[in-house]
Every structure is written in structure tokens, then in C-alpha cells.
Length: 159
Length: 334
Image (tube, rainbow over all chains, first blue to last red; front, side, top):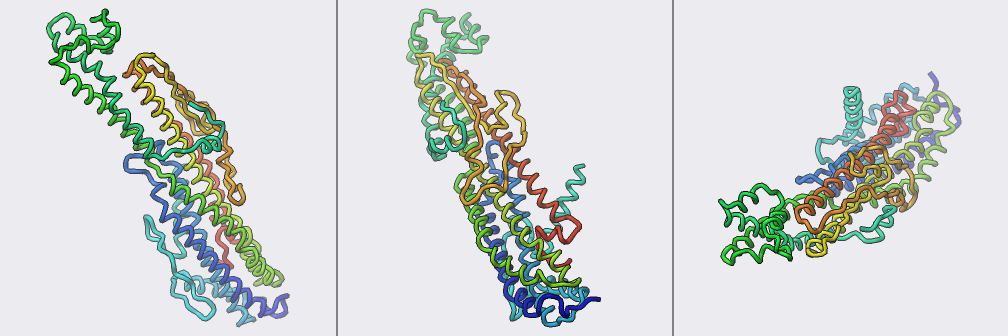
């Protein structure tokens, strides 16, 4: 299996990408996730059917809510995925001879740590800031996958 | 009623506060009671004439004003009050008020439903998301480029896998997220526009009704009119269909609106008689029916178009290839 000696980049490059830029990207994504969550939470009543029944039904309000949920999950998982990738890059720079299987294994472990919300390190401490949950429990990490699978299943059932 | 070629012209003409429209509707209370006095007086007279030939004919005639003309052809001013015994007048007045209240109550119920959706939260949604989309354009470019530049030259299986699955799709992911945000902003603005149009129409319809209900003598014709977004414009009194409204959901740069320029077409007009209060109320309810139908068709159309757009992004995410799904959720490996 290939290792990482003399491969066009230096461990310092990889460490910088993993230690500086990926966490900054992930932090930015966290901020966007929070913005999206706040926007949804604070204004969603205007997208829901009023008790008396808003004129013309609520098809567009419902579609916007669905789109917002997809966006929220995409942003949240992107923050996690970028953060976990950064951690893997830092690990790779420290263990420059890691194989790609080891890198993949490391990614899965780091992603699990990030998604659990328990991760802490001197490199970066993820911000656990999410309380957007208008209807169901939302956990970091796997919600979007389950949601997309459910949606796909519903589409197939329609067919 | 004025016609509006597009949403911009409608907004430029000013959107009234829903509470103002509601108050204006309530201003119909007394003139409606006045108009229903004729009906109430006819009923009081019919009761007084019960057992006579006039009373029998009253029961068989649906329109009480026709009863008036038929039974009292000498009544030149069209008012039964001349023939109403003084003793019957208080009861007739109370009955007239009750008839007016029943009509007003039903209209108010419909108005409340049509005015229920609040504009301010919708505006906060589309301005907030538009700002977020702009931030996505502004904030990430440098960091994304830096990450990609640092890992781009990493050769070998590890580096190539990282580039294929993470580095290469990373900027596409940011653009996809920005486009989804823009789509939501545009859709929320679309709902805001539909609701604004409804408030505007209700205001105009109420103005016309108020004017007409006071105008007893002129036999004036009231014309209620509605506009609809282009694709729904073929309604013309028939069932509206939800053909997709062509919207480029991911379009628009900073602060731009794709909704404002959508064409509006007059979809429905009904000439309502101001002389016959029963017919006028029937026509008023008819125009409200049509408004709800058009709003539903517009919403269905926007919703179908938005769902199609979001589904295209969802399909990217659920693609079996990591390099593709990373365009929605960037990850080094899975």
C-alpha cells in the first residue's frame, strides 16, 4: 500500500490545511447552520397552515419548510464532514506514513467523535450550538442520511 | 379596479396593512343592515299579510325586492318602509341588523383566512436567506481555495482520493449550498408576493363593495377583478391548473428579486349588481372563491418547481459515488 513519502506535498502543508483552514471552514459552516436554524425557528409559523386555514392552502409553505430542512441538514453535516477531514489531515501529517486504509479508518473515528459532540482537542473544539428542532429530534450527523432515505422510500412508494 | 402587469407595479401601488382591510370590512356593518332593511321589512309585511293572497305569494318569491315590486307597484322609490306599519318597524330594523351581521360574519371568517399569513416573517426569511447567500459568496472563497491549493498536489492513492472525494467537490458544495439558500429565499419571496397580492385585492374588493352598498339608487355595476401570475392566468373562472411557473430558483445576485418581474395577468372579472344586495354578496363570495383558487394554483405551481429543484440537489447527495455526494456534504471518506 502506498505511503506518503515524497508525494508532492509536505506534512506541514497537510497540517496547515487540517489545522487552520478546515476548522475555519467548519466554523463558518457552523455559523451558517445557526443562521439557517434561527431563521427557520423564528419565522416558521408564517410557513405553517394557520388554525383557520390560510387562503389558498399551504403547498408553498410546506415546500419551503422541506427545503429548509434539507438545507439545515446539508450545512450541519458539511460542518461535521469538513471538521472531521481536518482532524484526519492533522493525524496524517503527524503519521506521515499512514496508508489510505488507515486514513479512512481514522476519518470514521474522527467523524464519530465530531458527531457525538464530545470531541475536544487543542486543534479545535466543535461548537455544539444546535437547538433547531421544530418538530422532531435532530441529532448531529446522521439525521440527513435517515431523512434522505425516508424521502427516497416515500418517493418509491408513490411510484 | 386597476390592473397590474407585474408584482413590481403591484408593490409600487402600496400594500395596505391587513388590519386596515379588516376594519374596512367592518365598515360594511351599518350599510349592509340598511340594505337588508328592505328584506326585513318585506318579511314583516308578509307576516302581517299572513293568510292573505299577498302572504302566499311572498312565500313563493325568492327575491324579496321582487315581492315588493309585485305587491306594491305604486312604490316608486323602491322602499317598503312607506308601507310598513309603524308598529312593525323596530322588529324589521332588528331583523335587518341580524341579516347584515350574518352576512358580515361569514365574510369576516373568509377575510381572516385570506389575511392569516403574516408578511413580516416571510420578508425576514427571504431577506435573511438572501444575506446568507451573499455571505456564502463572500466568506468562503479564500479558505476553500487555500485548502484546495494545499492538498491539490498530493500524489498517490491517499492524496488522489482526498482530492477526488473532498478537494475537487468542495467548491461545488459551497455553490450548491448557496443555490439552495437562494432558492429558499426566492420561494419565500414568492409566497410573500402571493399574500401581498391577496391583501391588495381584498382591499380593492372591500372599497368597491363599500362604495356600492351605499349607492342604492344608481343601479351601478361593480366590477371585481383579480390578477394571477402568468402561468395561472388562463383561469378565467374555470378551475385553475398548477402548471409550473418558470422560476430560475438559484438565480439573482445581491438583493435581486426574481419574483418582482414575474408577469401578472388579469384572470377574473365579475360585474356585480349594486342594486341587488343579495346578488352583490353572492358575487363578492364568488370573487373570494376565485381568489382562493388562484392562490392555491400559484402556490402549487411554485411548490412543484421548488421541489423539483431541491430534488435535483437531493439526488446529488444520495448518489452512490462519494465524489458526487461530497458536492452536497463534503467528506474525505465514508
